[in-house]
Length: 302
Ligand code: GUN
Image 1 (tube, rainbow, N blue to C red):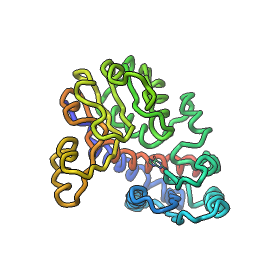
Image 2: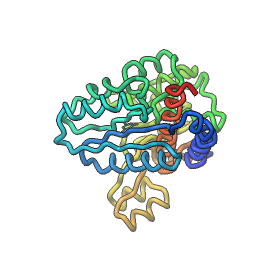
Image 3: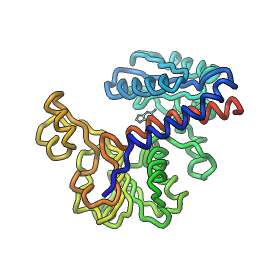
């Protein structure tokens, strides 16, 4: 079993952006600009947004975070996005999800100028992905494909199983694998007999958010296991069962640890796997920077 190393591949993606961007920024007279809109006080979202801001700044990008508390009105939020749509400093707009429940998420995602839609969740962009008519993709599936490419994994003809049908990961992931000539099955909460479907998979992408859901006896020898889950476990038993030794150490200090959806014993049977942490999560942020840079190139005609 070989690790698909998110640390190494994400560093390479960021290094490439840095190298490519310096001359282009000078010519364009401004850096790529990323705006992140965050509403409410979800602690996980706050951590993700801070990490996006830090990475953008480190690359020399212009970075704005627009924070509102959950009592912000629909008019105010609409006006924030409308202003960003016509702000020349901004190439990429991202609305951090989930929005607090009272907000109609699609209303705001639909409002983002598709050319500034850095997450690629606008219906026009999701449609283009399905049709194979774009080369900019949602960050998480894009990061997964980038890792597979880095390790020369060709999915042509593979039986791929995607666990989860969200527009953030599952649906675009399935389209992208299909466009790369894989045979794809999407499973979700109503799917019958998931273990049997998994047992035939050459490659599994799990994005359901349940620690240890994919167990060793469900996967075949030599399968490729991609773990999108970022789950917090709060008991010692769970940490010891699901987490890496480093995360168990962290549990001792912090009282919680992070793990994915795939049981460590399943990784033992794989040919390639992505660890949590240190796998897909790092790629997601790196691809967000890559998408911002690509949108900047398109908008500046560079
Ligand atoms: N919340 C979890 N993943 C994502 C993502 O990829 N983009 C946004 N905007 N919010 C998220």
